[in-house]
Each structure stands twice: as structure tokens, then as C-alpha cells.
Image 1 (cartoon, rainbow over the protein chains, first blue to last red):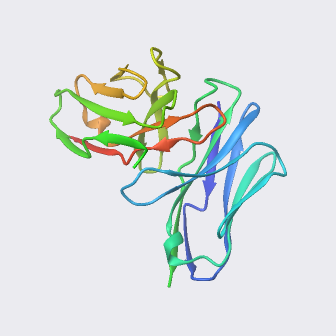
Image 2 (tube, rainbow over the protein chains, first blue to last red):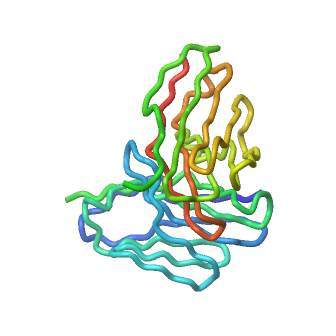
Length: 112
Length: 112
């Protein structure tokens, strides 16, 4: 059974204070690791897909990296508009090829 | 705007009542999904449809039924609502296995 654990559950940063969110996963073969952003009262918004260890993706102040056991979402010089819940999900070879298993998320608050 | 549309946005039901949550996408995606999101538990897959004419159970299918009406529409039905089905329900679609999901804005359901 695929499992995803995200830490910390909540993170408060000052504007400009860089940090990282962690996503640890257990899968029987990784088909893909996905990062999403979710704003209050809205559906998750797709950010990145990573497929193999060593891969990195960037978008504005966000950079996602992947190892064989975990993924990090690095936030460089965050702004208040980066405040959201960040979700990590994996798709493994067990079960349905189309099913994603999600973590519980990290709630990020960036203070001005 | 292109995307996934869910109706209604809010609903209150009494225990034992039935209702159908509607979902439509205009991106010509083959796969569609229904998730529920509960505090501290992340997103859990209820049912999915890999393509028009097919549906399969996800992680938490009990108490729900689905219909893939055509390529655009995928509905979720609660036949006899229970308080344990109080949740936020998200519909999503994807182009294929390697792509991220596009989520709707959610339906907040309360069963009293």
C-alpha cells in the first residue's frame, strides 16, 4: 500500500525567509510524485510532477526535488501570496495505475 | 474558463436523504475522479473512471455510486446519506497517467 507523510503539518515564515517542506513516501515502484497547492475553499492546483531520483522542477519561488524516499519543496524568499496548503501525492505500480495517494498537506503561512 | 465545474457548491442533507453531485470538464480528458477531503486525512479516492463507459472503486467507495454519463460528465450519488459522509468532495480529471489532475472547486456537504 502506497503511503505519503508530509511534514511539518504547519509552517509560519516571515516574508523572505526561505524554507523547505518535506514529503516522505513509500511505494512499490514510483510512477510519479506530484505537488499541488490548495488555497482555502478551492480545489488543489497542480504544480509539478517528478519521476526519478535526482530530478528537479522549478516555478517562480518554488523548487521541487526528489530522492528515492522523499521529495522536498523549497520555497525561496516567500511572499504572503505563497500562503496555502501544499499537498504531495504519489502514483505507484501497485493498485490502479491512475490512482494518486495524497499526504495530509503542509499549511504554509507567510507573514508580511 | 476551461476546467472542471462542480455543482452544487454547498449542500446540507438530513440523514437518509439522497443526492447527486454533478461534475463536468471541458478539457476533453479521458479520466475523471471523485475524492473526498477530511481534516487530517488528506484526499481519498472514492471512485474513478479511466475512460467513458468504465468506472472503478477507489479507497473509500462504500455508500456511493457513480455514473460516467459521457466523456464530459461524471456524477457521484449518495443513496442514503450518513453523518460520516460529511466532507468536502472534489471532482478531478486528467489527460493520462503521466499528467497532473485538474480539480474542481469542491462541494461542501454536511449531513445532519
